[in-house]
Length: 256
Image (cartoon, rainbow, N blue to C red):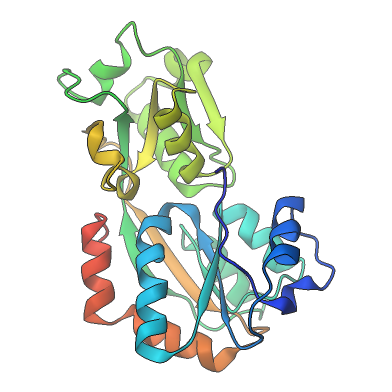
């Protein structure tokens, strides 16, 4: 799927400026009015799919996540989407929400990394730069750098290595970092600049991963929205994010 959505609360059935696919999901799967709703940057999906069930087991509060690029989630929040918590893939957008008086003070919840991933196992190359020179690498997936911080980090690495102009004609831009992994794993692209977390999933481990040290670490911040319909649930979730269990889950997927 290009973007995965959990079943969402009935309170989201109100008219919103959200994508059609989100609206259809809301209509199809209403849930309890006291449920937690998280706007989640797509790179954190593998970890969040373990964190939310653990949160429910610990607190009795059912959580749901909408996964997309940080930029698109920020736009949805600005247009009135009733999320409780925003977990971005950068520091800039939560800071902007706080400056606008729309959120509580942001905090860093994870630090991620960009890698180059190929679906084939045991691909031989000295490094990621040499890998891109292989004749078999004709299409390279990367997240849109305008809306996805992991895409911006990948483009920064290409520029730092002096490869952007050479590689640019072969780049296939995806809407989110999760979609990059889908492109590469499905064969729509020969390689992808993915989040390290995706490559540490069961499917990701079947391919080949190259570190991209030229890419800056992706510092990810979160915030509780002042318009949160369930602020108490949001506060408990933020507290849970600091638990030893969540630290273990984050480490499992390569987050610091």
